Amino acid sequence: MPAAGTHVFKQTQFTHNGATYDVMAYQKPNDPRLYVIAELSGTAVLFTYADGSKASIVHYVEPMTAVSFRQATGNSAVDDLMATAEADVRRMI
Image 1 (cartoon, rainbow, N blue to C red):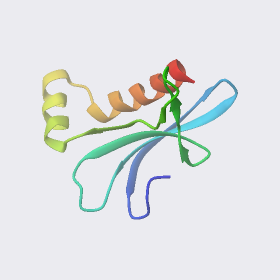
Image 2 (cartoon, one colour):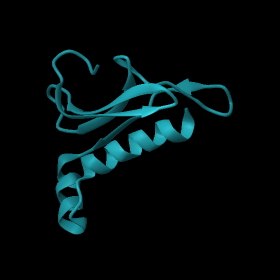
Image 3 (cartoon, rainbow, N blue to C red):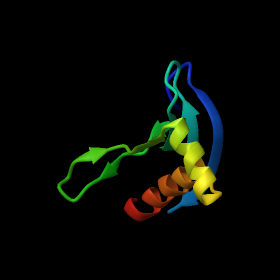
């Protein structure tokens, strides 16, 4: 789960390789950016890279960029980032 005080405003679930993942869109206190992260059992998903390093992936978009994106494409930048977070899990796990 994102840190205490964050505002989760959208959440979806999907199943992959027998595990249920959550993808959450949230805002941190005093930070206008819109963040998206994939989690498993309340913990950020750790991806293992070819060199053996591990890291979670947090996507974000600035609010004005999200507005411009919607005006230009008719799509939600947050929805697209949530789809990307799910695709990351499906591709890398």
